[in-house]
Image 1 (cartoon, rainbow, N blue to C red):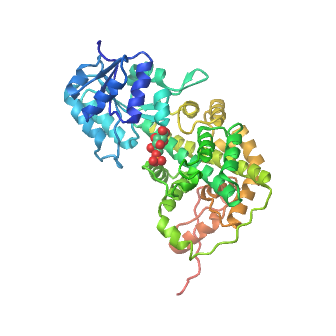
Image 2 (cartoon, rainbow, N blue to C red):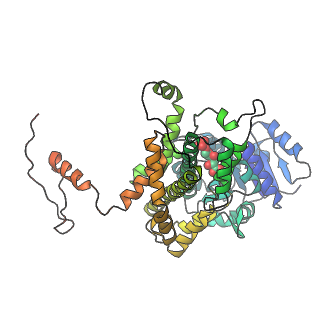
Image 3 (cartoon, protein in one colour):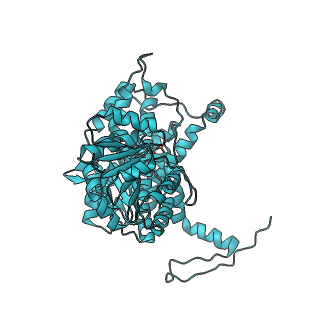
Length: 479
Ligand code: 6PG
């Protein structure tokens, strides 16, 4: 067989599906897995495909055309820039085998600062590196993911034909662009995941309200299926409807109702929170989503508290159709806030790092392939294409109009849930952000007075020019 166009290390499900995707576009693919029997089984399972199974890394590297293009798909668990993990281990093994200008691509969910470290390190060895976020789960990897590659533009140019051919397509446009240099790709994937957390939590809050209102799982499934035909059309709404329809063959009950209410998380949401705090960007919807997962995981504590701490009697009325419409609007509005916050964080970091990010193009590659793919990403794309310097997504004419039209129902849902003791941390955090952002005057004047009172931190005055700072001689407080 001729030399391979592309190589992939790490044949877990995502890796295998990506290989099959690349191969299906006419490329020959070399594969390597640490446990070699996995490689043998994978190649044997796909006779007639242009696959080269290598038993050793040496054999793998030698089977590739130059400049070699090697994608690593191993689990990254570095939580800080300096942490070494499996990605570093593979890179170290590859370095002595590679030649100048060969390219290593890390396609896992790596921490973006670790990506920047690897980029600089490999450049010092004369090698090229791309940190690429790949979204879409197992199915996306096989049929077309959304890819967020970061690294030097010249390296992207070499990878472009393969990436563009394997990515999902929307209106003929591939769901991949060169995001920016260094860790920009993994950074944008991290925020994608934060937004994913927000979307998922908002959907769960809608479900929880319906559940408390006495909807059956089939009724809820019907609502989500119907929503998937309208403004909320998205992959996550679609799978929610399907999940709610699913019955357990053993008991005949809803599978969803049999699942323990403890959410897992691998860390990208928490990284997003930390990054937002470092950059002083408010991402309260995403925060609420991450924290909701944390609280859910403390199940024993919750079970104990459920018999100790009181709440109100639940009474959500009997007009199910009206409730569905209100929750729809609360979800739609909160989702806009979540994206507004995530995009604000991308914008802020992008400017700070001088990555030259294009929010319109980033939104465009999220329209297909990835977990957060949704109809309304077309609108976000249009918003930034129309106004690349848009300060906040909420102020785009389309989204402004949606928020103005939905805000009343959104408030009613947050109030109703709160009065009934149903937790809606993401709905209410989103509404709190909306109301704070649109407030011409916040109570921070009092806060400034408090700061000046105890620490002489000074304040500006409404009736004096900005930038002039004042201090009051506050009375002495004893005791
Ligand atoms: C994707 C997903 C994928 C994965 C994340 C989230 O875009 O395909 O985001 O990367 O699902 O790891 O996982 P957790 O929910 O476990 O944090």
